[in-house]
Image 1: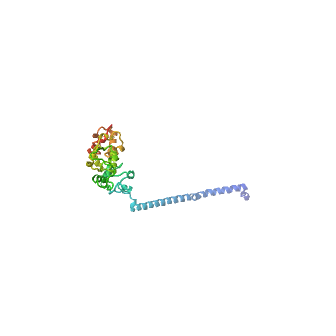
Image 2 (image 1 turned 120 degrees about the vertical axis):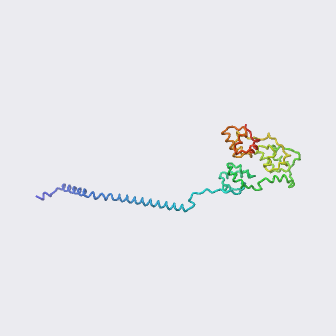
Amino acid sequence: MWKDFFYFTKTERQGIIVLVVLILGVLLLPNLFPLFNRPKEVDTLKQEKFQKEYNEFIASLEEVESHKKSKNPTSRPSVRKEITPFAFDPNTADSMTFLSLGLPAWMAKNILNYRRKQGIFRHPEDFRKIYGLEEEQYQTLLPYIRIAEKIRPKDTVRLLTIQNVRKDTVFKYQPGTVISLNQADTTELKKIPGIGSSIARMIVNYRKRLGAFYRIEQLQEIHLKVEKLRPWFSINPDEIRRINLNKASVERMMHHPYINYYQARVIVEYRKKKGRLKSLKQLSLYEEFTSADLERIEPYICYD
């Protein structure tokens, strides 16, 4: 009879086995959780350790780099080099010379372009005409400008004083002949005793820049002896081409030998702010104009 008690059908035995497995699973499940969670905890610890080591490594690199910079003088902020002027000839200096003198690259290029177009600096004061050159820069460089002797038109004086160098094949006027200084071309000028081709071209070129001569003494500005030339020339002031100060541009005014860049800018700014000019007295209060400057340009300007 007891055997009947422990006798189970096939279905009952399967049920018992499943029940036992479930009971064992419930009992063992708490012990299995750490096994599943441990890899995640290990990964987290490894990641934290790696991040800490990485941060220490980066910090050490930054410390080494800063140490190198403190020892390396080239890594320190560059100090602007002070410009020391030196003697130079604006007719022969190259671009590196102008840069060494503190002039910007674009200004050096302008000077070279001017020389390439047969432009010549005959006197140190001619360097003042460079576009964009500030007055302070000009005053600093002026004592160091050296014009080569062959550029200076000293031969013009010698031609007027030395007449026995060689005979000129060009026909010369007789004493007592008088011609118009503002109308004569180079061919006619060469007929004056003592005037050759170079002097004639010099007179014509300077006359174009001026807009005509208004007195014979202006020939001294191109290093000619006025007293030797005075008997040969007459001057008509009505032939002067004048500059309209109320319309002319900066470039147009700068082309005149008596007006520099800063003076031209003052005139243009005055027109913008205060209107039309009616007299040179309106410019007398500006430091760019001296009384001598105003007196020189007066014959060459108009207001209408």
